[in-house]
Length: 169
Image (cartoon, rainbow, N blue to C red; front, side, top):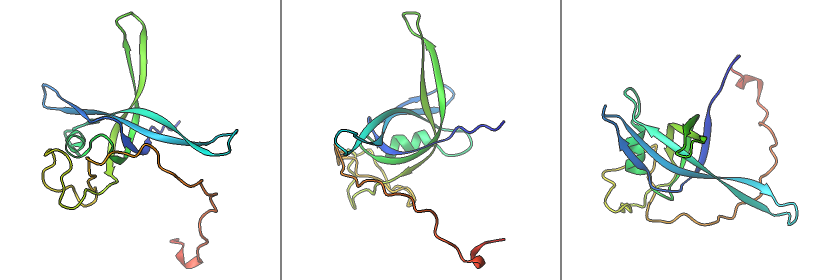
């Protein structure tokens, strides 16, 4: 039986990343992230956002991207980002003896969705250099809006028809 554990999210950071360094040189960045579920209010007929708050962990890996470093350097509270990751269940026993658990998302990939204002760092001096072109930097001093008006979702009409010569086989 096949398994799939993949999460893809677009949302905003709810707090600045908290970074810890391990004795072996590894690093983890923890931050809060919020996404909205859209639902129609049955009594008013209006579309409403229902926020979902998540905990994210980003690690530096020996081989591969140094995600904790990127999160620490480029992301701050209010920044919008596209995250790809997988679910991880944390379990522990609390001081009162009760067993506790929570789901976290471990970051596998990251893409910045806002551009940094031209010529402005907007991060209190923490930002040095320029963000990679494929991952534009946001202006961290600009607060996230409390509410953004969004149109109602349109019905999906399906893919556009293709001519037979477009099919690759």
